[in-house]
Length: 228
Image (cartoon, rainbow, N blue to C red; front, top):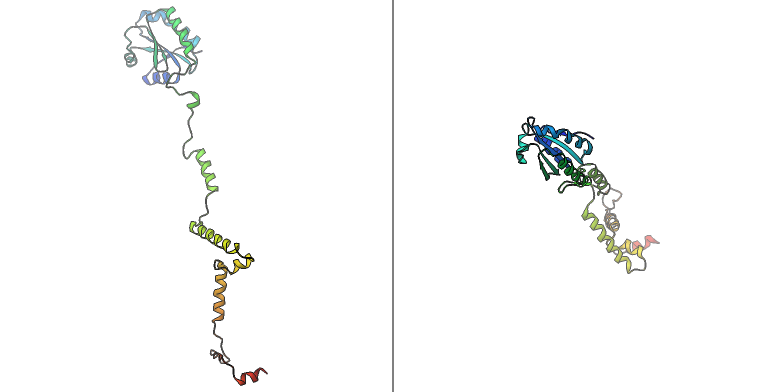
């Protein structure tokens, strides 16, 4: 158990209020006789009941921290104020050890309750941010299922349409394989037809290197004799 905290600045005071459930503060002055009389009693209570983040005791010198004293309307010394979070729940004026001990006993019961508006420990932890460790895992997972760079939506649709067309062509035929090969939707057949047309339309050369004359469509007696 630690003793009371001597507040040295407004920032320190607000930090203590924000991090502790219950704060009991003694507003005093060095020239105040009653303050010196009850001071040791306040110090003993602080050592007995102080708990980190649960209950803290503080001392504010009104001459050195006039802004804090003015904020809470302190006009007489000693003045004791009990805060639950940032809300003042009780004020005691004067050097009365019995009243101070009774008030602190009540405050002990508040020290285990979280003040309204103060985040609990479960919600005080920092959350994950975009681009952090969690974001990196999601990005890595999405990269595993990403489409290849050469993927084409139109090409995929074309393949689906071609598959459906071949399906219906072969559905109503007895020889599905032959129907698929002879179908106009067979892209391999188109290439074969082109090569066949090129082969049939090629010009044959004669012995002298010139194109051979076309054979007549009719046959003569000489042709018949040559075949015999």
